[in-house]
Each structure stands twice: as structure tokens, then as C-alpha cells.
Amino acid sequence: MQLKAYKFRLYPSRQTEQKLFWTLDKCRLVYNDMLEGLNNQDKPNRYELQAMLPKLKQQYSELQDVYSKVLQYEPYRLFSNLKSLSRLKGKGRKVGRLRFKGKGWFKTFTYNQSGFRIEMTGKRCQTLCLSKIGEIPIRMHRSFRGTIKQITIKRYKSGKWFAMLSVEQKKVIKPHRIRKAVGIDLGLTNIVTDSDNRYTCSPQYLRKSLKKLRREQIRFSRTKKKSNNRDKQKIGLAKVYERITNQRDDFLHKLSYAYIKKYDFIAIENLRIANMVRNRYLSLSIMDASWSRFMQFLSYKAGNAGKIVVKVEPRNTSQKCSQCGEMVRKSLAVRMHRCLYCKAELDRDYNASLNILSSGLKNYRRDCGKSRLSEIEPIPMRQALVCDAGNLYNSWG
Ligand SMILES: [Zn+2]
Image (cartoon, rainbow, N blue to C red):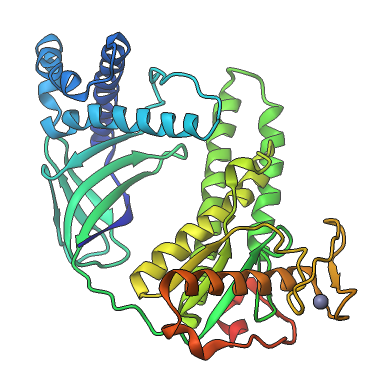
């Protein structure tokens, strides 16, 4: 059994949308009251908070009009927020306390186990029936099998509504025999350089949208505070932002899919995201986040396909000579690796990806034994191949 997530767009009528907003607001009320309860506790106790719910329902009679499981989910949400906060703290980040949610800051509510149903209409949109809310057209652009365990309704800043489905699926995946292996180096200009000497940078359309985002940001910063124009610009900005995140994810889905399809074994640098420079430009921070997003996509796709992804410590991967193993020190500005010992000359990132692959294979052999790996060595040097990111499938051949 495994849980898979699906995201589908909702098209509520104006009337239903009012009901969605209203439900969001009631969940916010419960969340905030429970947060206050939590702040009064000496030691966080979820069951005590859950026990607050009947009292709250007496106090605010309108809560009767929210599906009970939706309200029961709120203490769970509060505790998972608390957990992720302490996880950040554990990583050495400076964290404050959980904050009360102001109006407009509460964006999701969740139906767990029951209270929802999807009716197949056979048309472009199916119907999502939510208890105490009603029927909402849902555009299910892909089909799936399994049981829906949970539905989270989310409103985005652009004003669009989505349903996130958690679906439980039965699946037995047999691991593949390892025939083809690859090492991947992540970078800024070329998001991916691999040990088959293949270079992929982010696609043109994405770079264009990023430029547009930068323009919109400037326009937004010039509007007057608390003006109508500013509110309008804010929605416009959110729309561009969402579009870029979609474009980026779409590209990263294609890229990771291409690797999973072609290779049985993928070694990749283990980035320490927390240590990376946090960028103050929104557009750059989106690209920064692509690395971890790409790794996330690779890992889950590998899991579904019976392929293997191994993370490698990034130490020395760019300094070591992939051909003879000697250390060749160089600054970040030096783009070529020129070995003083064996005279090898190759692109810096290509050299790194070869090192990543051989460390990955070494680690895997140490942990999982030799038998499944014997066929793939040695790794030959190859001609460079620059990929067209906009048309990945064709450029991979
Ligand atoms: Zn060398």
C-alpha cells in the first residue's frame, strides 16, 4: 500500500465559493482557539485540545454547519505545524512561535476519511460532493486507481481553488536490474550536467516568465500602500508566480521522468539546502528551490518505477580528478578541469558528475553488495551533448 497525491482544479459557483470561504473562516476560528489552548498548556497535548472541540461547538453554534471531521482535523494540523517548527529548530534555524492566523491567511481545510464523494459525470468536469458544502465541478485531468483517503481544499492567492487528493494504491514494485547508471551534478547555468556529458539548462519559456515576474514585482513595489491598484497588482503578481511554479514543476517532472526512464541507477549530490544562500529575489529563490524539487521528483518516481536513487556527499566532487583520483584545486570561476597529473581535460561539471557517479556506485556496493552492479563499469568519456530543455524528449534521442 502506498499513498499518492493528486491535485485537481475546482470550479465552484459564486454561491459555493462563499460557502468555501465561510468554512475556511470557521476552521480558522477553531485553529486559533486551539492555538490559544496550546499556548496555555505546560506540555503540548493533542488529546486535551481535541477535547476542546465539543465546548467550542456549544460556544459557537454555527460550527454545527461545518462537517465534524473537518473541524477534528484542525488540532492535527496545529500539531503538524508544531512538529515542522521544532524540526526547523533542530536544524539550527531561528524560529518563533506558531502564529494566530489572520483573515485571509488560512487557506486550506481537510476532509479526512469521510464526508466526500466524487460523481463521474462523463463530461469535462466531474462533481465533487462535500458534506455541508455541496457540489463543486472538479476537473480531473488524469485518471487514477485506488481509494481516496483524504481531500484537502486549498485556495491559492490568485483566487483559484484546488482539491488535493490522497489516494491509497496497491502496488508491488520489483526493483530493476541495474544496467545503466548515471551521475548528476546540479548547477545554476546548467541545472543538470550528467556523467554521459549531457547538459540541460532551464527552458527558454521559464526564463522569459522569470523576467516578467521581475517586471511585475517592480510595478507592484511602485503602487501605493492600501490602494485598490495595489490589491489588483498583488493578484496579478500571484498569478505570474503560480504560473512560473507550474512551468518549473512541469519542466522538472519531464526532466526527472527522462532520467528515470533511461537509467536504472542515479547518483546525485546531496545538497544541504539549509546551508545554501537564501535568496532575497523571489525569481531566483524559485530557481533555487528547483534543486530540492528535482531531487524530490526523482526519488518518488524512482520508487514507483523500481529504480534506484543514491545521494552522495558533495565534498570534493568538483576538485577530484575523475580520471586519476588526484586532487586538483580550483576556484568556482574555473570552468575547466585540467589535471596536472594525468593531463585529462574536461568540463568542470562533467568531471563532478563522473565523481558523483563513482561515489554513488561505491556507496551502493558497500551497502547492498556487488551482484547487481557488475555490468556497468568502466565509465567511458563521452562527447558533450547539449539538450534542448524545451523539447526534452526529442533532444535525448
Ligand atoms: Zn587526473
